[in-house]
Image 1 (tube, rainbow, N blue to C red):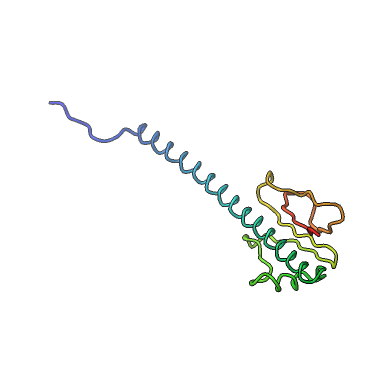
Image 2: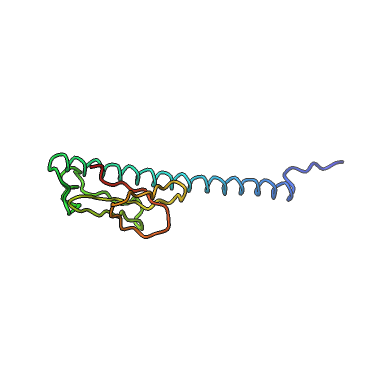
Amino acid sequence: MKKKNFGFTLLELLVVISIIGLLVAMGAVAFTTAQQRGRDSKRRGDMQSIQKAFEQYYAENTSYSSTCSVMADAHMPGGLPSDPRSSGTYTITCTAATYCACASLEDAASGNADVPAGASCNFSSGGSYYCVNNLQ
C-alpha cells in the first residue's frame, strides 16, 4: 500500500519564503522613496507659499521687511511653515530690499540651488536645495 505525502518539501518552502522576502524588500524601498518625494513636494510648496506671501507684503508696502516673521504674519495665517521632518529646517533671510528662502531636499537630483546673484541665501554648501527669492 502506498502512503501519500501531503505538504511541502523544505526546498519548496525556502523558495517561497525567499520570494516573499524579496517582494517585501522591494516594497519597503519603494515606500521610502515615495515618502521622500512627498516631503520634498511639501517643501517646494512651502517655499512657493513663502514667496507669494512676501510678494503680497511688497505689493502692499512697496518694500520688504528686514524681519521675515513680520511678512509671514501679515499673509500666512499660521506663520512661517516648518520642515515636514523634525531634523530639517528652512533657511530664510530677509532685508528691506531682498529675501531668500531655501529648503534642503532629500532627493539630491531634484534641487535648484541656482540662487540669482545678489540674493542673500545663507545655506550650507553641498546637498540639494530648493530656493526662492524676491521677484521685485
